[in-house]
Image 1 (cartoon, rainbow, N blue to C red):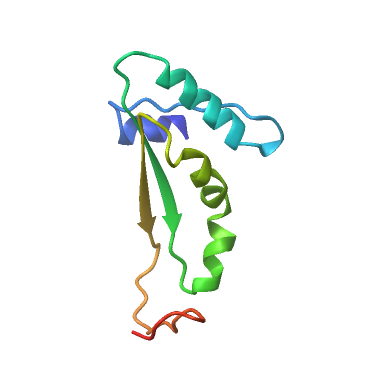
Image 2: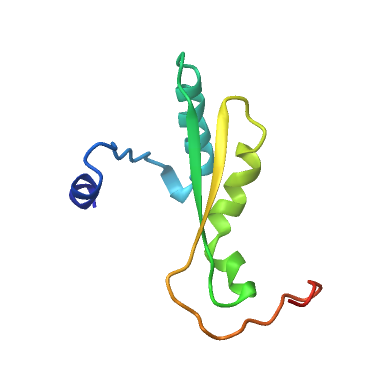
Length: 103
C-alpha cells in the first residue's frame, strides 16, 4: 500500500497510526492534538463518506466516520471536510428515505 501511495502522491506523506484492537478514535484524536500543539499548523481532516445505492446501507458503510465526526466538530484550529463518493453510476431512480420529502 505504501508503494502505491508514494507512486500516486509523491509529495504527500502517508502516515499510518498504529492502534490496538481496531480502535481508531482515541489514537486519531491523540495524533491531531499533537499536531495542533505545533505553532502554525493548519489541520484539515477529510472524512470520506461512501454513498451506496440504498439509503439504508449508509450506516453500514460509514460507521467509522459517524463515530469520529462528533469528536472533530467544533475543535479550534481544525477543519473537517466531508467527501462523499460513490463507486458506481446508478441510472435507476432511488426511493426517498422514510420521512423525507419526495423529489
